[in-house]
Image (tube, rainbow, N blue to C red; front, side):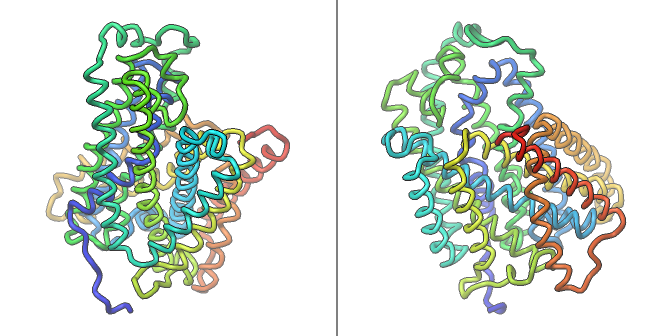
Length: 477
């Protein structure tokens, strides 16, 4: 099995993995989420912050792919290389868990989109029928992926192309109906919206910007399948530039076609409602179909990434060995089984959630921040050490700047998220550490260094505070 040749992915396929991972559910909800929080002026500031921060993170991924070509499945492996075994585990577990939560969000959005056509059955995406349909979808994808990664990545490439079309049509429609007077009226806040400071407006958009940028590391995660290592960094930057342009357009152009209050009041997926305000009912139907295609494609990409992260972590002895097992099609089967069992349990739990849609979106965003912070930190450490820069020492200073900006950005995102979500993430991290104990016991290795023990203690304390908050109702999901 191990001797079977590994299929290789081209630059185009790797870029499609990045675009396919990023263009999923989030982009179709930008108009309503931004209109609820701010007007065009605040949106421009928010995208300037998010775009700069994520571009720096993309450059860190690119630099690490070039300087450390020996490290595969980069997200958690970079954290381990820079900060030790336990931080590497937390990065791997956090990234995997966040990906699982993101997949739950996708199924909630699919349900709410079907609710546009069948409101009684699907409602907001968390009805019993919506959950049953989601579970059928989860396990249908599961058995398809078990047939092979190359087949799944080919399907992802096709779906990526198909789902861009509704976005382009929506952008062209918004441009055609562009009304400068309406845009000016909305620019600093609009009519009929509550007064908020500019800082509060920008802060309220931060988690959605993190969510829509998730997947920027898609090429890095699949680096072991790349034909050329240099393609990993190139695919990351190409995917980032293309998707950022789409997201900014989808956010700003609706402000020139309808009052901000009207955009804020549309049903999710809000791009469908925003286009309906402009062209009529057919626009909402068209976008809703695009949402279903897009989200199913993104779910496929993230299912692959979830399994790949667990598999790679097990291969490097950071997760139990059982997750390193592959089937005859070189698919990490045990990792895929655990992923879809966890996703299914979270989907079932949405039945009791007050607002599963936004809660899953925000939790996914916060869970991804720790892995991103550790990657950015490792980028700084690597540039300072000079490892990998022997032939290009002049680039060390530049890459340190990129790394530091990415570190500051991710720390700012933690602050913007608020203590509630940080504590809830810790609640999930504490039981997850059982996997770390399991893996270390298999390796007969020491559990913690003194510094790692402090990190573990802080995580446990935060988890206990979060659990107490949930039990007493101080923290509500």
